[in-house]
Length: 293
Image (cartoon, rainbow, N blue to C red; front, side, top):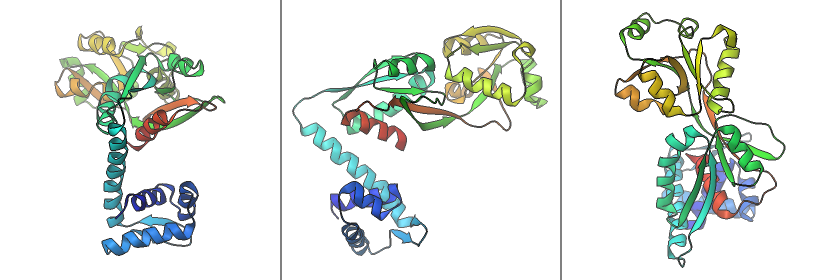
């Protein structure tokens, strides 16, 4: 089993095509087929099931794919580590939820493979993150809303859900026991994120789907910090809608209650970068890693 065979195998499955993999790797299609056949002969199992319409992977192929990805990452990491000391930076702009609840684990894992890569990270609202990318101040952005801008590429990389959070007191415990619906719950005093926030954008979409107008709501505060909102809810000032990623520890510690919102789509997070900007190999690798988590 050779590294080049594993690279070919991974490309075939990720592109769902022998011909596309051949084009990507600058090989002939027959060469790709020969390498896959060599792997199958060595492992004594089929890796793919090919039909005239589609390409599927076998259960043995799925296992090999998992190990092949790790082997290829380790190969890249080895190349990086044996190079002369050469610290490189990824310039990253991010909104608050990805910065606090996605990036710490992602970067920790990523640097196991690429220990010479460092990060410059700026945290702001989704709106300001978009501006940072458009202005060229940062290379890669992570935001909580999908955008359509001719200058930007916007790709989904993570999904979560919006939940209603309330104080954990007798009043709200009773509402939870009664299994009150969203329309009833949203009549409570409400704390929201500021304009430009990806979370607020997701919340406004929920209000639109539920045909709720702002005039129907008891908005008592708009806050540009997720932690402040959580503390306000804990202290009984009102309820809020927030990404479930941001409150898992509070739920575990029984500091707040959560209510799920029925028939609401997942809240998604996106990678953005300039369409015409030539991102270097370091940035491209990180983008691909984000899309694979």
